Length: 219
Length: 219
Image: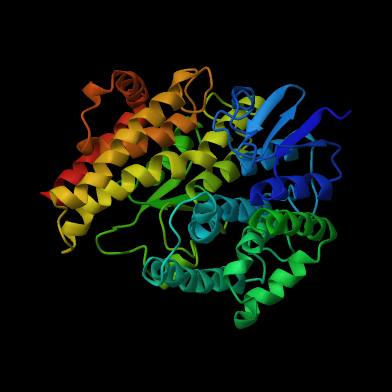
């Protein structure tokens, strides 16, 4: 048994990003799949691992870390990671970190809030979006296309780096969950990048598991 | 002349956090004060330093970094910082990073959005808040009191660390700008922490400069 455990659910975008980072960095770990439908993350026990009771979180030698990006930073330090995905080169790492600090505001919030309003809220008995209530989300999605195209324009990668990094994996996982909201064929610059990152074997494997889980959950 | 320049404006909370980090860590730097009223950050020249044209940003030996937390992380790495404010101890650093990754969502957005709506939008000719349009902001401020009290409850510090760190400085600077919105005497747990962090000499010095700037700007 490894001294590292990742807690999460495959449907959670940041869970898949942390799991992908572990696999891409060759870290040994076990994955503790919390059944989010049974609300296994809302227990007092899990609050001891992540006081916010959000997924993912990690435990390494009985030390707990939460916030997905903070988990990646801790793992990189403690396991001395220096690879393409999160190199020790301070300049490349700074570019990746600047992306990761912008990721929530720039990618996760605009996409995930639309996704929740359109699919998750009605699934749990809340109101369905109407043409009128959906319009502001659609407008923000249009704005987001432009923002993200601009973000990719410099080097073709989310962190403005010369090769794909963990920044792209974080971005990809958000867009994969939200892909049901968009036709990426209409956004060729994003589509080209999306297909490239989605073809990274471990990213592809986790995405397929997530899509399967979403199909079951929403069917 | 130092090989490090910090670009920003004293009224900007994250600018003061990066400046404080430099001072608390004994880094030599020059401060390039961008006059935000003249929109000196909205130039093509500044876009080469921060593509988002937001403050602060740093240039170190002709390498530019943006996003305040990413600036702190880069500076800590490149200048080998290991002090109370951002120790190399991986566990303490993980706690600080988990706070810093939550800071925007947990502190900056709820406070700064109210501040902008109440003071900045009318200052630039936009609509004044009415009792009705201010109510949701007031409700969110009440929620925020509880969230932040909970955040401090574990160890009395924002990063759930045993001593004050840069996490507290980031939190303090947001609350200082927003202090005009609240009576902290009604929030004694927050007030005690606020007074302690605000008494750190360099934090106090920058806060006084910010308050002076705000007084002139809004008078």
